Image (cartoon, rainbow, N blue to C red; front, side, top):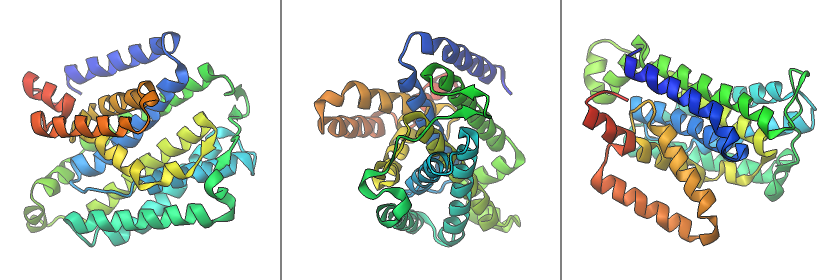
Length: 307
């Protein structure tokens, strides 16, 4: 790991340890959950070159499973998160097996179509609670020993999950597997000519991305004690795309910055109502026109070092 990246990781850890004493912990946990969600999409889009408009299916589907398991089955939170994540993995494998047969805009539309099917299921299935969703999900006790009812104690669990996800993604993209993904992204035809099973690698990164998105969704459910239709709506996928592009597509730390920017806007500009969406749209247009690399991508370009 380059010295620059080690310093950034160290700085993130130090800031994360200090932050709950200065900022509302629930807000910070929301940022971390959505940062993990954006990083999951960035793994697929930024490094795999596959645009997905259906990641809300894994984020929201996992949220519903985790909520049902925690509330109805009365399991501990780590079991609920694990089963929610596993459900996202299975769903990602099923959808990915079909979606990778198409490329470009057709791939994106297929993922969106499947996500809408999941949304329809969330409306119709009895266990999802319909338009009411699953509310009052218990946080429970971690491993049956440590109570997570306190926002402060839950914060450090979410922090561990978020940092673990970041390290996992960092390891993936800097492994030989990650280098093959970049080769496929840059020139798929050449990767095929070199003998790589392109669809095999696409499916693997698709499933990994869905799994991490599911982990984010399940964790968010425990934090907010709620799984709702918002989690599986197509707009949730668009938010992840926006976070990735604002922060810097194809960068390691870009989605973290993008998620922090978007979540901060949503929280502190909530009094403006629907105008928040307009402001987000303006920021997106400005980003595309002035710095297409995103915030972190622009910084990396200036420093001439990958971030």
